[in-house]
Length: 205
Image 1 (cartoon, one colour):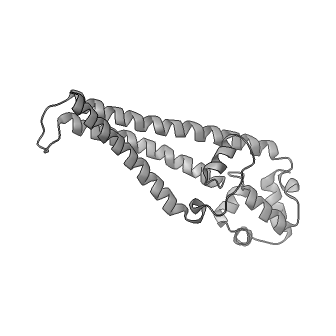
Image 2: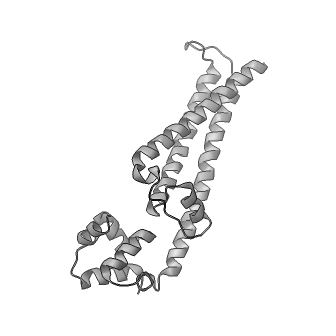
Image 3: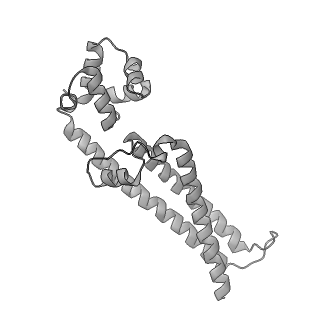
């Protein structure tokens, strides 16, 4: 019996609804429904809580489904790696476009201190930053589905090792704030690099 069937069978055995189980193990009813439908898998902490609630071992819950879980984790780890590389590549392309257009297209514009190349470079940077942001958000979604927040946890996950959860990490205690700060820092870093490179191009001309 696979995990989704195990979850449903044990829940019904105890006469519990999805909402009852979700409340006990601190997840949403939608998350519980997703587990029972086989769309996503619970993390290790959730499996432990489920095994305690149902009075069965984790081995019994996941027996027959271990291969599927490993395959899903491998696919998610590969997707995280590819999307992270893609996000970084898009940012670097945006910086290159911003600096390059500023250097080769010096036609004046009505905007003070801004050439046609500067404006086109900023537009290109934004156009490439948006898909980079989308990829970053998809990576965050995968990390959230596996309860990954610290670099150590992400590194272990990518290497296929057991994930050492850090309950004291500020990124776990305040996930929304931490995500907002990361996005702001990423955007700020990209713009800062582009600005510095633009100044260097001007100085070398």
